[in-house]
Image 1: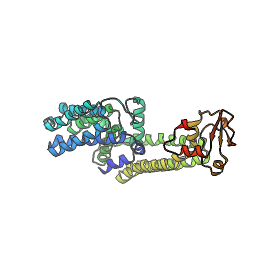
Image 2: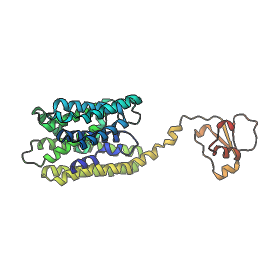
Image 3: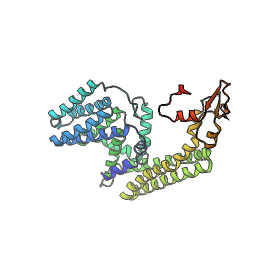
Image 4: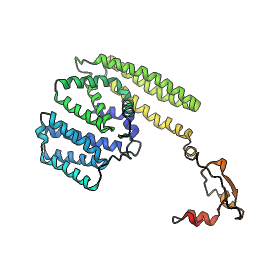
Length: 365
């Protein structure tokens, strides 16, 4: 569990998404917990676990009902078909949970493909979706081939846990959400734990892909530093260099841990490489990029104000107004009281007070 938590905390995708007010993270959390309690119900079909399972199903319905049905019903059906303890899921309460929420949201008209609050949705191309999933796994990417290969090998032997995990993987992909990141990190965390067991068969595979990952990342970080210098000169280069150094140094520590078979080097190195470098990105690099991006100018670069704007001299001195627009096409002059020119926008003290009134209507000026 600790290893899994470390992989989540060091995921570039999950932590970055959690900074934004989007529905991806709560939906992934509800999906993961509903899967976890569905597995518990497979083993112990007690009423209390079914109720908790129903609560997380309800949460996923509140976020996006259509995706909740696709993921939840799909996963439940998969378990009923392929798992040997399928009878434990043939419970009246589980059936009532799904029938109730499907009927309720059908009546409320909640079933649609509206995913306005999501960053990842069915409007996102599969190429972009998988690209961001792999970027999120970057510190742990060396374990992914072994994790997937081990899953499919055990699935061929029809091992119970592999059947459960394969169903989770398939419906995580079909849901087109961030839940796939949590699923892949779970598979990776299992391989990290198994790496230290005697006769673990995939050590060489993990070492090979981890080294290749670090080599390709090195060239990517060099490109990032050069890009930072080209865009923001010395400030951009220094910021990118600090980020790159933290990621690569602790990534190299993890490689040492793979060859010396030291758990704290592997988990600590990759965890810090992901979590600390990501923190530096959002704290140091992103504010600089935002400042030079100059969003206010970008948003208003196409705004054209060809008329003149006259303001009262007292307001000019008091700096009690702001003007947004293209400065080249906006002529700001002190208000002289002349109203004979039709293209002037007049703003005196009375008009300024009107604008600051909550009941202000533009037609009053």
